[in-house]
Amino acid sequence: MPIDPDLAIGATVADQDVTWTESDVLLYHLALGAGDPPTDPGELRYAYEQDLHVLPTFAVVAPNLRQFEPPALSFPGVEVDLAQVLHGSQEITPHRPLPVSGGARATTRIVDVLDKGKAAVIVQETVLTDAAGPLCSARSMIFARGEGGFGGHRGSTPRVDLPEREPDLVVDSRTEPRQALLYRLCGDRNPLHADPAFATAAGFERPILHGLCTYGVACKSIVDTALDGEVDRVASFGARFAGVVHPGETLRTRIWTEPGGALLATTTVPERDDTVVLDGITLTTR
Image 1 (tube, rainbow, N blue to C red):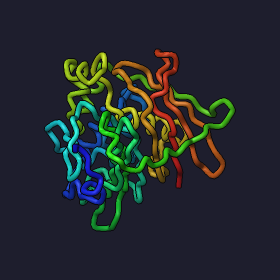
Image 2 (image 1 turned 180 degrees about the horizontal axis):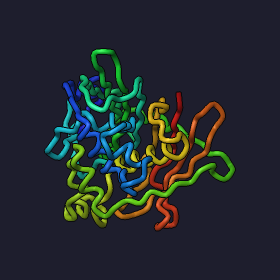
Image 3 (image 1 turned 180 degrees about the vertical axis):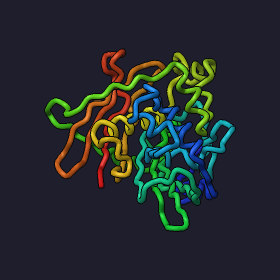
Image 4 (image 1 turned 120 degrees about the vertical axis):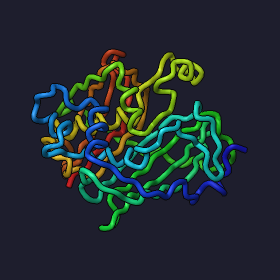
């Protein structure tokens, strides 16, 4: 059996020291599309080392920066074909502002395995800890298509209900045709995002953009538009991956401001009748 929840739940997937430099941060931001236009002071705070701001979503890629092989979903109790894997959701909770350069211990554990019938969902948590204590916590849900039916519990799917009014803010972010090729240099070498033959075998018409790239673009859009670019105000950021993005498409993020400072949003592709690609977006502030 590819998935054994008794072995998987509680298993440590990775426990490693990670380091990053300002060049890693700059590359990550450029892979999200930062620096356009290149003379905009708001863009230069992400694309130029002088007064460099670090988007909190950088914490998601920090543990994988030195990974040069395609990822594998091969852990204790889990053995799944990479072509059947999709990112389901991602949450981050930065406990402190991320430094421009630094290091931390990254510990990743499987905290749950859900049986959705036609698919299994592996829930992972990663904690980055440095000398001062926890730096950032992250939780991801990974869908493994065709791996359900092993008798595990189904779990629940939290809903985020958007206000029944027009959004307070709308921002469009253009992706580039080569954006997935750039983003994969941040550590995700899954061939689904580069190899047309692999993408076809996985059921897609062509390589798709990394879900975490879309996730980072949406976070940047909200921070820039609703928080005046103040990255350190982000207390948490989460989203569910609802559809694929083809590199070169536009991402439209609609933002609602809630009492207490929470921000709700959804991201769509206007070129495809506003197909939803990220939903359940929630950003809380300090």
